[in-house]
Length: 182
Image 1 (spheres, rainbow, N blue to C red):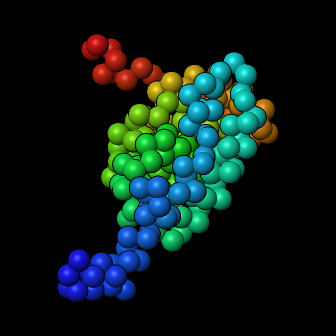
Image 2 (cartoon, rainbow, N blue to C red):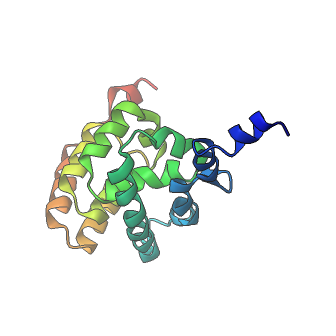
């Protein structure tokens, strides 16, 4: 190897960039490869809420809260592309933790991400954020959510304000015109 190539390959500017990748992922993405939330979510039975799902959401909370604090949404496109399970995990975590700031960003910058996720109202009800429930209904992110199951979950986790809000939406629910034309 030539001296020039050796200087470049061992430079202090290049080595940290190369070493930042482990297992083909940037170092800050590695904690997310261990999360199992997406597997629990895919086999969730809405007749009986799996408490393991809430534990997985809490595990994801530690990792995601710190990551978003450090990187905000600037690295989110790369995270979603590099760790595909995060396409399920991120919206669930945002909704469960009631992060309206991030939900609004996902809605504007990654609309398909929120739209791909089903039963987000269930997760918002379990999380207890009436503001998030209102946001999801206003943005029509209630696909796959049955209002009765959502109310049951809100009551089960003692979120009376959420249960009352869902009940009022359920009472006033009107099928969107787009469905009528279908």
